[in-house]
Image 1: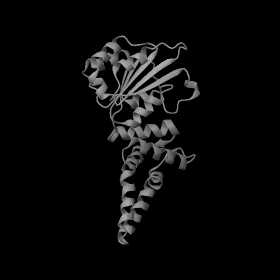
Image 2 (image 1 turned 135 degrees about the vertical axis):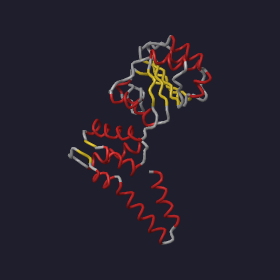
Image 3 (image 1 turned 60 degrees about the vertical axis):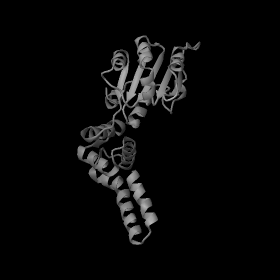
Image 4 (image 1 turned 180 degrees about the vertical axis):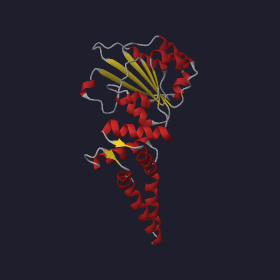
Length: 237
């Protein structure tokens, strides 16, 4: 399942094992927000959840499984998140296969990896009892669809494909930055039901045009240091 499908269903994670794989950090963070007690913005309502984070580059499997299998006298649900877990999975694949075959039902193991081969025994084992959620980068039509859906689902705004493509042309394909641009567009278009290409040009493209002209003026005036600062802004965004 791709993260966009998972997020569009407005579902939460109620399984013992979940693997987030791929290179799009924004999507991984969005999925984690759906897991009570697992996001950085966890609220008091998540007090019944105990979250433990481990760095996959230096944690041992024993430490992870001990945490997962610890029984709390208060009956809270345990979440163990292993970040950057590619090396961890490679080193302890056999042990993870054994755990997935008989996982704790009062705990959730989350593995955050970049590479996750669908042909492996571990992937197939997780698929049976948990969730494999692909968090790959979005390109082309998939990225346009995400923007269109996000505008409607998050803000109740109609955004056609042409306007969505224009946002990408002006702001790039980073989902985090595109989300920021949608936030601005939704706010600045007020009660309007749609976000138009004119809105995109004015809100997203306006600062780029101004910055580009400022950079060219700086070059003309021989202020190369200032020109490079403007160029950095354009590249970073």
